[in-house]
Length: 57
Image: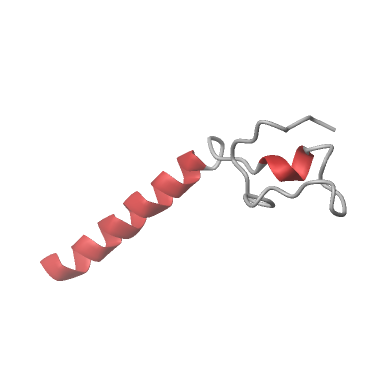
């Protein structure tokens, strides 16, 4: 029985970590005014979390 409980608690812990991390790590490219065509050539695109060129649409 102890072996069955451990994976369940790990799954719950991982789920809660992902749930609370959603608000802290947003991808900026979705709301950036440079998100079209070849306007942005940064290698982090489209998953940038920080960007010096970010401008909100």
